[in-house]
Figure 1 (cartoon, rainbow, N blue to C red):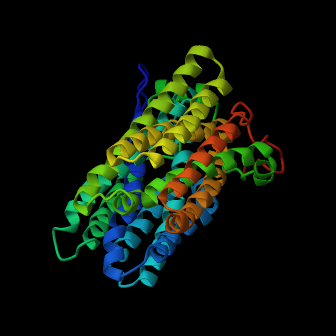
Figure 2 (cartoon, rainbow, N blue to C red; figure 1 turned 45 degrees about the vertical axis):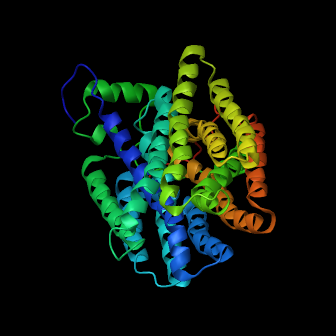
Figure 3 (cartoon, rainbow, N blue to C red; figure 1 turned 45 degrees about the horizontal axis):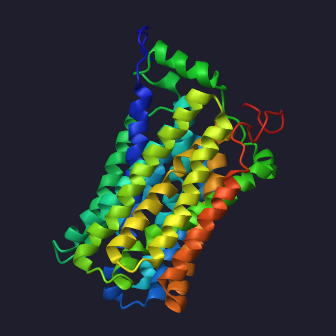
Length: 432
């Protein structure tokens, strides 16, 4: 650590930028699947329900390995853990390009989901020792804005890449696999598990961080799973995120297909129209986190500052998605969907800031539980949406999205971000 004392350095913002880049890459890989889906469906001669089953392989693995991924990050530290999982899923992304059938693709997507499952919980743990409480919501909003930027740009990048070579949809998988490996090497070279270990952090920044967060415990601590899992608030938070992730899962997995199947958008134009709602979502990510932190700083009302942004976002999203599904004009529909995704994304930075508020040193594990329940919702969304769209039409599928948005708002009213989900005890919080 540098011995220079004076104006605090801002190394934590570079750490935040690296995490934003990780979210960006994660969602490039994730949305790549849905953007490439029409091309894959055509090559492998898959019906919509079979395609849904293939995509669901990723979602199932992503849900199942959230808690193991969060535990891995808490166990070995975010520096090594993030490096491992990003290299893992990047290698599997490259292998996906070699798929020759629905079965081989499903296996590859399952293995990618295993790796990507750890990304958000580990990254959340990575920020827990670096970001001040008054910076948490905007930091989480910025990281999720990175993911939505990936969602926005992926259709614009993938559709042109598909036509470049005979590799068709396979080329983007190879390109983005290389991007992931490059990021992983840069992360391992720069990030440190504690600000005190980083050569670029001076005494001023270290004092500011430790003054806000308290001194860091020495040694590794056992995750207090019994306290976390027996806390009723944990399950309310998880249920809220189930609703959120179901909704965003529909957009991530099916929106490009919806545009071509229900709105008659040609494949050559699909990339642009699919990007517009995700761009609106990106703006929502930044706005929600910034607004929640601003309210916290100006009012000092912690719980209210988190809830008012989240609840308003969920309810506004429910209304906008309903209007989008019922609109006759495709452009009007996309406009309402854009507003709906903007409102939905107002909530996500707040949700993840709450895991830092209530999770403390074990934010990785708390966020893993929340994200597990969320991605159970996302996995269900893939299959349920395919079935409802086939049997009853796309409007009914988006009706479920609107209903769950309204429910998420009600659940968020019951979440108290001011109370930790655990207390240190000799049994649950020992140092080793």
